[in-house]
Length: 313
Image (cartoon, rainbow, N blue to C red):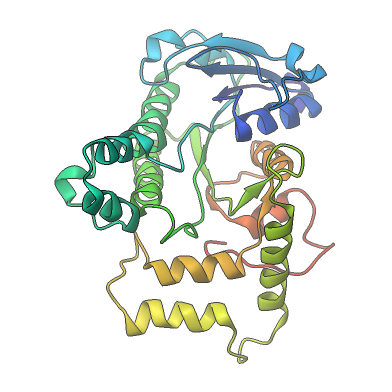
C-alpha cells in the first residue's frame, strides 16, 4: 500500500495537534478527513486559513455517536484521535461557582475522592471519546483494497504535568491506552499506537520557545552525563519512588512527574504530526507506547542529535 493510496480520519483535525497531523498527512500524499463537534475548518489564531485546509474533508460529527461518522470508517486506512483537554474546566468551574475552594485544591493536586473523579471533562474527552471511536473503527469492515493492518493512533501524554495539573489528566490518558489495547486483542487486523508527547509547543501559535529551549537543554544535559553522575531528575525520581513510595505504576508521584519534565525534551507540534504520520507506515509496524525518543527516530533524528530518552521508550 503506497502512501498516496492512504486515507486517514483525524478526530479533532481542526485543533492544535490535529491540524499538525492533517498538514503532515497531506504532505505525504494521504487523503484526510477530519471530524469535530463543529465541523469547521482549521484557522490560525490570527484567523488566517492555510492553503492546505482546502485539501481536507471537514465533517461535523460527535465522537461519542458513531452513527455520525460510521460511513467514513470503512474507507480509511487509519484513525488518529487527537481531542482531549489539559484542564478539566467542567468540574473546576462547578467547584469555583460553589465556592468549594478545598475541593478545587483537591482536584488540582489529584486527591479528589474516587466517587467525584468521574464527573468531569477528563473522562469524556481524554478517555471515553477515544474508546468509542476505537470500538467503532475496529467494528468497521474495511473497503476492498485495504489489506494492511489498520492503525489506531491515540495521542496520549508523558506524565510531566503534576502537581500543576490534576492527576486525573494522566490517569484518564492511561485508562484510555489500557482499554484500547484490550479492544485490539480481539482484532488482529488493527494495531494500537499510543504517542506520548511531552510539552508541545509551536513558535508561531503557542510561543513557549524560551521554556521549551530550557527544558530541551535540561534533557540534553541529563542524556549526556554518565549514568553514575547524580542529576536533578534522577535524584527527584529516587525521592518520588523510594522516599515517598505512595506512587503506583499506573500513576507515578508528582516528584516522578517533575523528573520527567526535566529529562524528556519538549516537542514542536509539527514534529509530533510528522511522527504520528510516520507511525502509520505498515512497514514500520509501530505498536504500543511511543515516547519522544522514538518519535525522533521515526522522523529521522536518531543520527542527528543527542540520544535523549523518554520515560517509556
